[in-house]
Image (cartoon, rainbow, N blue to C red):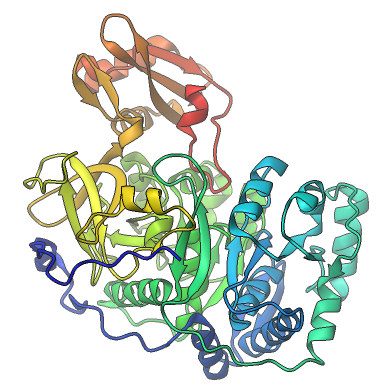
Length: 565
């Protein structure tokens, strides 16, 4: 494994952000209470045995159920002869089988490789070959993709599950509808595959050998485009993820300074569990707290999502700017009571108009945080008790250092824009089998180069101005797409917007803006007049293109690279 350790004599960063911390949140991270995620799971399942852990499509499993089912998965995996550190891929959306498989893999002493179910065969083959996975759990809706690449990978064990497998009697009806009525399961054939149910049954008759896991052992290979766009596996150890969930638990205290915390927190889990944000903020933090995660399999079905939101009293709602925006544009959203729900945003910048509208509709502010797959993911966050939307990514969380550096690695003064560099116990051990890439992003003194450009103010709050590669250079001036998009979002006729740079013979680059209309009557002249009022000339979009929708990743992040073509 690639590991990076900072020298013991590394220079200390001036932690000006500590003065802005809530009194209740410590500056330093206490020692971790568990040696591994498997140990955390076992302790939580014993402590919170009768509580619901996960709910999907109206079916709940308790922590006791989770303990039993993950034990069976782990025992079965060990019976295959897989050794500590071997990789197992999990290719599922938010269904009950996902956490059962993931925690089962961890309990077996193996490494989880999360896979986006919507991958093309080319993308899937690259990831499976790169990580060297020996087994894969997949929802049958995506088994045809696995079938196409299996012969070109090292995968020897395939476990296929159906959507209704954990739903009891109701599951048979669900499977019938999914397969025969909605025809959502393309034909597939994988000789020798095992069903999820048969694995559970067989595992119940097998012994589970305890794995001697330590904090430095790998827990996940979390694939990411990183700062270059080539998919790489971020090596996340057990201690990386245990540290980040502990950091989050300490930070969460600021949400309950002026009100009591419920005995059990209920989480909206709309972001996919194979994404690092939901993995840590939903699944692992929920596990640590004995929380209840309500899984949303298809958050793009906004009417059904809103109906689900009305069934529970939610305490935590992690999400993205695009998801919050889509919810507010449905008239039924206004009927929900989210006034006591802590809403945490990450993954992309939260636009001020979206945050202000959310506050007006729910009575609560969105708390924006920041992180990457390489930081497990959370590196900074605003205070939950903040009386305003700061428009920043907040303060480095407990035990985390930020340093804003120029291209030569020099620290910059407050207020100057540079690359955000991050150091802390949640920073990855490196990229899987990519020592050159690891060396490129890790500094000698242990900082991870995020690839994000920003500045820190005198209170220790950091403002992102954009990704390095997304910056637009107009006649020598830096123009940041986030600013263009935020101004666009201020116009009542704009639903969504994305800005990119395009070649220009006079200025080098010019700003091009893509817009999805909220008001069908919106014209190019309206947009240009709006920008003339709000931005200086060189920042204004030279070209405007209206589209019916913008390309997005599976978690709802707008893909500027696809707009660039």
